Length: 144
Image 1 (tube, rainbow, N blue to C red):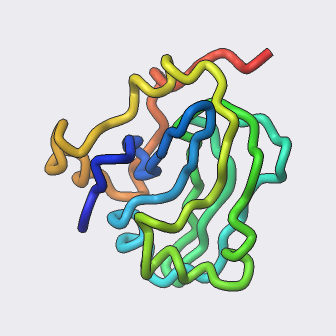
Image 2 (spheres, helix red, strand yellow; image 1 turned 120 degrees about the vertical axis):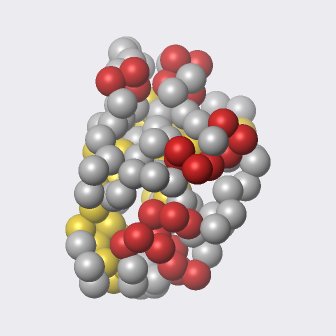
């Protein structure tokens, strides 16, 4: 499993790519491997405001349904519509398949809680999907 250096990682196994004020969110290769064959993805609506650490959707596989947690606070500007017809794309290319794009808000506080690969892949990969909870440090104030 690979963890591209260009991303920041949440303990709940979502990745975040930041470019300017835009954040792109996906799930890690570890998460998709743990879930197994993904058959459905539920994503939020464009315009929805999301708080860091809150659920924004779910991923359904042949094994289980798992909540998706936002690694940052912001407003959804785009969802990956192609996942409606081909959710299994996540299994074949988790590091390239994004779920949502956000206009980031209060970017710095929520980014501090994200992990980088070099901080400890061994520790990072220990939790199972069933035991992962969002960190309390993720709580940030909304965009307003």
